[in-house]
Image (cartoon, rainbow over all chains, first blue to last red; front, side):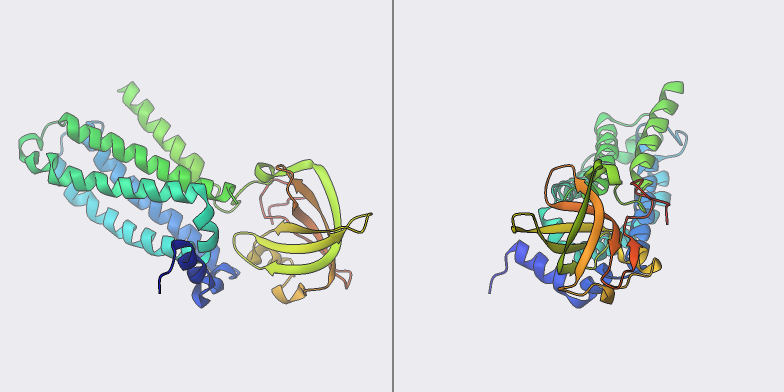
Amino acid sequence: MSLSLFEFCQWLNDTGPAAALRESTIVFPIVESIHTLAITLVVGTVAMVDLRLLGIVLKKEPVSKVAGQILPLTWVGFGVMLVSGLMLFAAEAEKCYHNPAFRLKLILLALVGLNPLVFHFTIFRSVDRWDEAPRTPGRARLAAVLSLTLWSGIIVAGRAIAYFK
Amino acid sequence: MRYRLGIIAALAAGLATFVAPVSAHHSFAAEFDGSKAIRLVGALTKVDWSNPHTYFYLDVKDDKGKTTNWACEGGGPGALSRRGLKKGDLKLGDTIVVDGYRAKDGSNLVDARRVTLPDGRSIYGGSPGDGGPGDTGQ
């Protein structure tokens, strides 16, 4: 049996827990609020590291120390953001499938995941050489700008989901 | 330094703009035309009691006897419940009166500002804080 992506969204949309969340009186707005708070934790902490790479904040702190202290918080936020996001998606899966803003958001999320992966396996390997430098190498700064841009786009696209049918 | 602070302030303002209005979901004016008031009277054909907006559908007959199905958008289950409208109050086949405003795109969609049930009960149907006609934020 093969299931198209749209059929999967329809099936998910009609499962008991998804319908219960969609029809709930207060649980849906609570999950929505938790999702938004988790985004602020993820993007807030990521932005601190990006701004360090750009040499705007914490210039006297080694990059590895800043990343080491801040990024564990990012992962906590990411876990909460992912779970609450999947719940909201399930509740509106059928609508989301057709929603252009939601589709754009998924593409940007894939790119924002790829960015640190490339960063960690390339330029970050030589961090020992520029750990203390206020201004980091061009590729590290490029990664920081991409990260800030993509996350801003994700938030805008996420907000825009409400404005499409 | 002033230049860098400017960048940070711009980023922060940009983020705040898009994160803040979660409870309003989307504003009345984003989708509906406040100058196009309409009254629909018709039989209830479907109810989507869903977040973040409920939708219900009416079969409305025009002067020539032609029936058109209209979609009516209302506040979410939480807002409507607080005003005393429960899911079970909307029964398929019942004749409902909806006073609302048409969608800007001209489709058969209205924002249901007031819903009148067969028993005479009249409930405010707008989303809380959407800034549309009659909105008190409640």
